[in-house]
Image 1: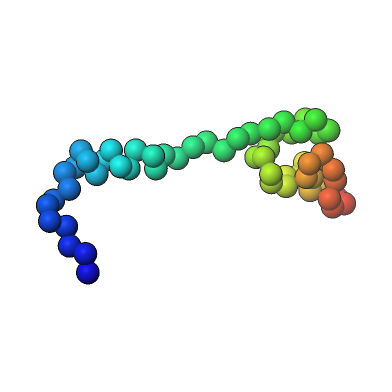
Image 2: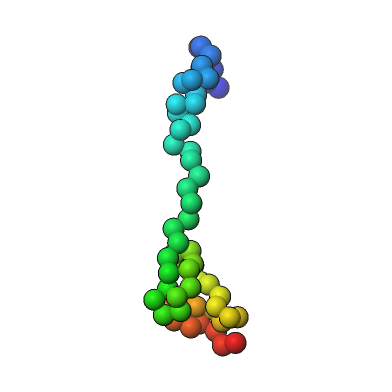
Amino acid sequence: MAHPKRKISKTRRDKRRTHYKATAPTISVCSTTGEAHVRHRAYFVDGVLHYRGKQLTEA
């Protein structure tokens, strides 16, 4: 097993971890329904499922 020769400092460890940031999901507004939704996800409007501006299910 690999074994580090020296202890990694907290500063060096934290510099490496700076890229692990949580980002807010991209919100879009549907041109058909006007509903705000997460991109590339189906969404409900008044109990009806929509995706990419099209109705997928009946109420």
